Each structure stands twice: as C-alpha cells, then as structure tokens.
Length: 233
Image (cartoon, rainbow, N blue to C red; front, side, top):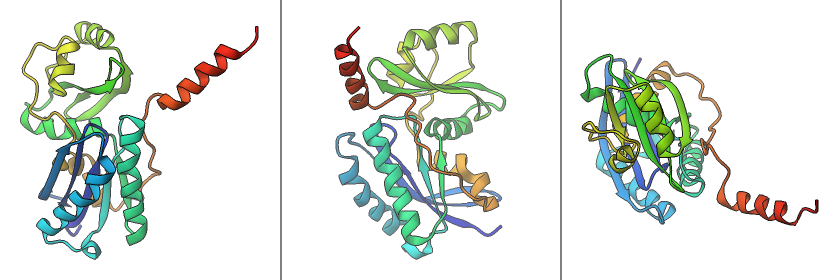
C-alpha cells in the first residue's frame, strides 16, 4: 500500500489537536503537530491550527488522502466542532473521514512507551465531577468507554488493577491511581494516526461518524428536568 497522507483533528478534550502525518504498512510518521488548550474557542482556533499544520508539513489540501477525527467521548459543544469540521473538510475534498475513539488515541500513543502486554486505564475529564474512562491491553480496548464518578473507577481499579495508566493526571489521582501516569495526557496526532492506521492503510470504507457523548447535552437534560417538574401527578 502506498503511503497515505492524513489530516488529523480532535476536540474531545480541552486541548484542540490537529496535524498532518503519513501512514503506511510500516507505521506512522508525524509531519506537523498543533495543540492548544482553549476549550472556549475550539471553533476559532481549529481552522487556524489546521492551516498552520498543512503549511508546516508542506502538504496542499489536494495532496491529502484521508481525514481522521476524534469522536470522543467528550462534551457536546467542543466535540461537535472537530467532528463537523473534519466531516465538512472530507466532503469538500472527496476524502474518506475515519472516526476514532479519543481514548483509543491516548492508549495507542501511550502504549508505545510501556512493555508489551501491559494492561492500561485511560481517564479524562468528563466535567460534572465525572470522568470518561476505558480499559486496554496492548492499546486494544477491552471495556468502555464509560462515564462514571471517580469513586466508581477507583473501586473498579482496586478490584481489577491495571499495570499502567494514561490521560489526565489529576483525574487519575481522583480515581485512586498511585503509580506514575503516562506523559500522554490527551489525544495526540501520533495516537490518532496509530489508532486509525489499519483502516487507512487497508483503504477500508469508513463507517458513519458517531459522536461519543455518553450522556445527553446539558440543555436537553435541563428541559427534561423542567418537564418533570411541571408534570401533574
């Protein structure tokens, strides 16, 4: 399979991530990487960062072969910015758009730094005093993703310990993790390339982009709560 040039986007966390890389049968290579922590301005900064990454990589838009987008789990507003941008970009250029679980991207990058066969937990901030999390072995997801209170995750990890952990250090600590966390704290360009590499290299037809919200948007929940409050008994 020829080398494929890929645009990568993820807005599932507070860090806006985008970049350009290549994928072939021998592995992945990052050509340009942009990341900035600005959860209130995902839409404003993403397009600028994409242009910067393409320029740095020396890749024209018509030189791309595919788009890879992180599908969460993540908050509704931020997540939909990246997914809509990636879908629109792919549609405009006639490119396949592959969706990747953002926790899988963290695991794929972190696994490069751990011994083969390691069991891993990946944890990120879900806000509202909850976390998104999943379990892995050798970067392959074996359970999750789920959204839970940190105490629930701590109980699960105590009952079934893991060898290593990655994701948000502060939220791992809330979940009772006492070991050294991976330096991979958010989705990365390398991780997104690794997590999607098999499909991209195979030229597989991408499935529909499905956002992993794992719970309803706040606005919907408030509406439901108001409806319950006024429903006569």
